[in-house]
Length: 137
Image (cartoon, rainbow, N blue to C red):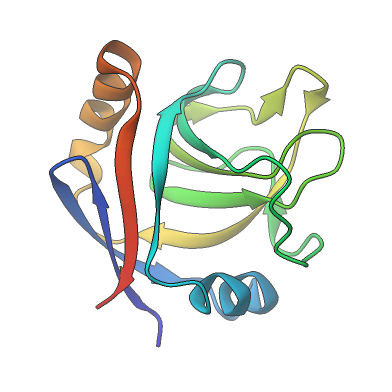
């Protein structure tokens, strides 16, 4: 199953798992669906929002990793020099933390609603943490 529904605040997006490029990350995240959390605006990475996950261990290493996700791409940073997190790019991103540049596993891509992404960023920046939910389609 690769089709997903991602809800951020009151906005709904279609998405897909990148199972061929990040099979381990997709499998472990899929096993946790539905996945609910809060996202906030990033501090160092540019035009993105992130889900801080602390010391949550997904048990995966790097695969299909990037420091420059494109708008609509979700990346999972599996932890290490910074806390575990999921980042969603809505514009230009250079993925980083206070420790420096990071790379995350690109494992989900939005397939609809990309025009709404700047609004996601603005809401998170000006109104604070927003609910996010990942579920199977």
